Length: 466
Image (cartoon, rainbow, N blue to C red; front, side):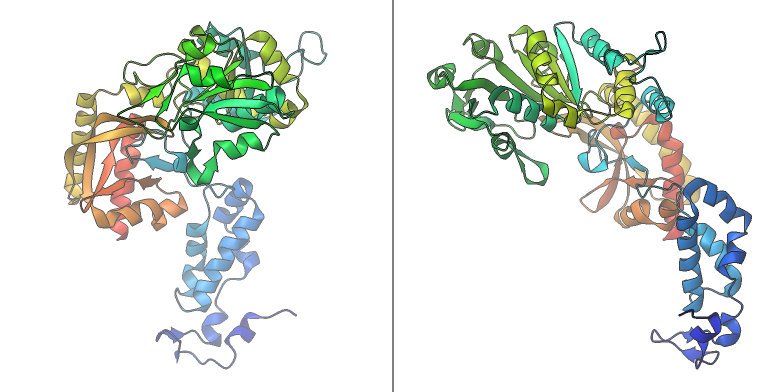
């Protein structure tokens, strides 16, 4: 059944009251609402169709026509309203400026990629030589050779390297290949961690068919506890960095070097992806030190402190890596060409946004904040500079704070900044800060300096739209 515009207005004379108390348009006004084919011919819609596809354009048109039928807008404003409804991209993800002060914010996509990584990703988006040897015209011998070589250059102590789709996948592969036949994984009770979204490490490990041999206590586990648990059924010892909490006081944990002396395969999950020691993060384990201390395999995330795309990094002994990467499960966990390209560029290119944010000078942050407040002042925006503290986040460096500087704004700007119409339409980026003591703080340590002008534009748009 096809319903005409006239049918929709039949029996509702011009000016008839709506349920909300307004006047519903009658047949005369309804007939003035532009037809869908007319709106699709609008140059703005035609350009958007090339960018996001016809379905999304028609959906924006339908919403605008619906607003006119309900009397929210007049028929002559339908085309403009539809244009304002057009999404900036064909994907539903919205670009966000992370002004929370949490550098690696899991809910905001963890590490923002560097320009080098995004350029590499775009270059690989079409057809590329991911498994093809351009010299011989035959299939390439090793998929992802470039990123493997980049990892080994970054961590010279690693005899071999591999990449899977996240750190949980790296642990699943290790547990399946080394203990999935019912052998035991020896692990401290103090390292049976739970991270975000109710993800529990013990559940993951047991799902592979391995058995857990828990040793020690929550706060104290010695090398002797591990040694007493080792039997012929031991697959490997697993040491896990409890990256999103700290246990303080009467504590003891066996070191990597102590565990390496026990003569059993040692897997160290360092979590946050720090490849070498960092002066600001002395308590954060890193891959180079762990391997030097005797770990046989180190696993880590690619999208945290490393600053790259989501990936699981495996570094360690060559025979062990070969065994894991030739396991049938490795095929199900392998990464695509986009991840390979972005990860290699992260490793070989200039410092990532995360690395720059960690190294940011508080004095430079203060200068940026003063400039932003000065740019907002002529528009009557009540903004001021305030000293604050940022955090690493993303399950890295728990308890570590970083000196920072923020822009303090009225709390009622929080929603317009992150979800107002200008942000929804893509005219300005969405901005997410944090609310403290009745103020909205936009922490600049987690904001790229290149985004300062966009941040100002977003604040002005949010103020205008209140």
